[in-house]
Image (tube, rainbow, N blue to C red):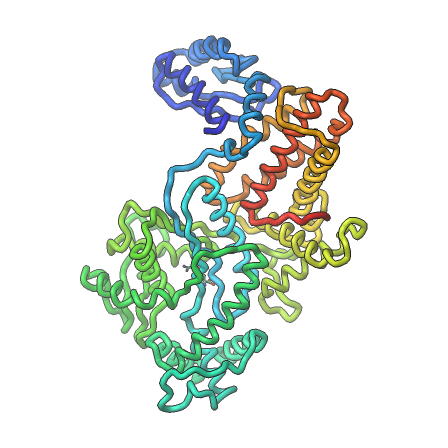
Length: 581
Ligand code: ARG
């Protein structure tokens, strides 16, 4: 249990001992002049017990006064209890976490959660829309793990839609002699005549043609249907294209530090579709509307339009909702899950509402399993519009990263970073700039990404955090080189070190609230706060030249904790730290 939680529990015990049955919360004070923390429950208790809140507050205060963890307990206004922690309590706290910062983390109830994020589409380039899914999804995954949750991450590639038919059709025009297009083809192996680079041209070419040429579009639809139904030639070709494309997709996800346990896709759900449709049909949930198989998912309480979920088109093809429903079915068959989390663009919310309702209504998912949709807003450029290439197309993700890399390269200190490391270091810093900016706003809000601003070393930016963290690392290294051992924390000297300690105390709540909200914004704000509080302390105290040995040791212990905490939080955000910068 974290110290914060322990102290909160101690206050709770006091309140209970006084005969009040309730759970109080210890929160950060918004009047630091009156105390570090406050308990605002006296008013609630007054209502419950028909007493005067100030009387209750005083009653509690008298016990807190007798406890040496608390000092300067005072009552303000209508019964707010202001509390500060004694130096003894703060010193104990630091000694308690100095060897393991996990002691400053409160685990959540143990669970197994599958996280569905990434969602790149095979044969198409990853674009900036996939960025946030990878960043936020990966960070939620890492946060959940730190909090003791067992997670399984799945990239859930889009590999079963119309792009399959379009690419195969386009290739049949470009390479008509491929064995897979020959009559009587029965699955023998052949070499794919294209590279990853070719693929980046093939899909856009076919896609633009399908927008003008209806016959072409219909043929692509036909082929998509045949691929979905395992046409030997088309499926073999599509599988090969998928493998090629996956390699490329994986490179970009590696760049983003997004790691998936499962590299599955829509097509992996295909085996479950007949079963799922049978369950829905047997329960009388589906019906035919204009030739298509649909299911109603409307509820009486809906105030927005809720169209039926579309499961099979009149031409037999399956849809996005069908594969998602079948994917859930497959996941629950294979894994013992408590929850499934989806992280996609918030504009997909309706789709997931429909899918989730169909899943619960049909009993494919039991009520005790939670399906959660955690959508995100759009990242825009400084013009307030989504990032576009010079020619006006959606910007591929790699291009965006490269653009930020140029900004970071400009700012690189060449006196510090050796020539052969500059490329790699710029990449690491660029990713920090990008990821931090992406995690800083609340998940569901749109935000503006200004490459120049977020590459800056000053301000609320990824590079600032990296720079500061590396500086603490150098300090600790220097101390070791000078033979200074630091094991114990026993002095609080001034307000600047106390502020660092008080900030550290808040960590467990920040992590738990972020987990609850499925958004990293509080973690991102917190690491900035911890870092700047530490930097203030660092600039006000000359640590290595301090004459008082005990104090020097205490300060180094504190610095080491901040360093480890920063490393943990950066890792949760999927941000790597360069050696030097
Ligand atoms: N491939 C989809 C897209 O690009 C995202 C997939 C999200 N996950 C899911 N289970 N539907 O929009």
